[in-house]
Amino acid sequence: MALTAKDIRFVDAYMLKPDPSEAARAAGSSAKRARQAGYELLTKPDVAAEIERRQAERSKQTGIDAAWVLRRLAEEAEADLADIYTEHGTLKPVNEWPLVWRKGLVQGIKVDEIYEGRGEGRELVGLVKEVKLSDRIKRLELIGKHIGVKAFEETVRVKGLEGLGERLSRAAYRLKSEESNG
Image (cartoon, rainbow, N blue to C red; front, side, top):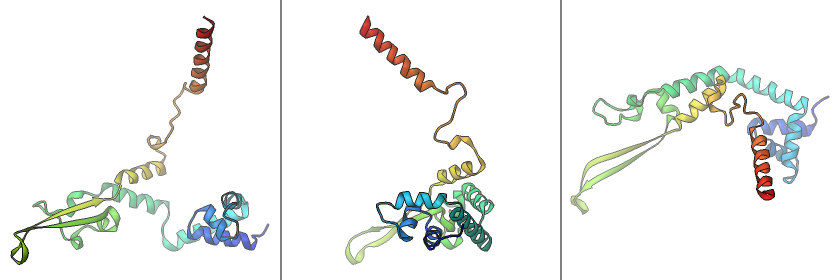
């Protein structure tokens, strides 16, 4: 089965921003039906195959693949904060930071100047530099998910606890019945 014009518009939009609802709207679905249409289009074998083909092609062209992402996350997770400070504890100029810090580990730098005196006679006596770091814990979670570490799953199945909620509900019902009968 060949891709329709709508399928191709969906894939084009999805490759720009992988949001099925938005891609479905861009492909011509109504806003009301976009969510369902996006899901349906993503589950069409030909559409899924085309998205996968294009993603593989883009990965090959850019050299960015799962191994690249994992290497980058590991490098960022292990970056040492001391690398951006001098031996005296002052913040180095940004151009002296290791590349890993300049590529996104720092979300922002806030510099406050401290003055003494008033008016034209005031004098700069110091600077307070605040560095806002990006979320390093999120990087660890992403690494854990990539390599299958179960510590980051929202729900961990513990052996022997299957059906515990249902058993507790039945027990609570029996207790309630006994109390009302007793």
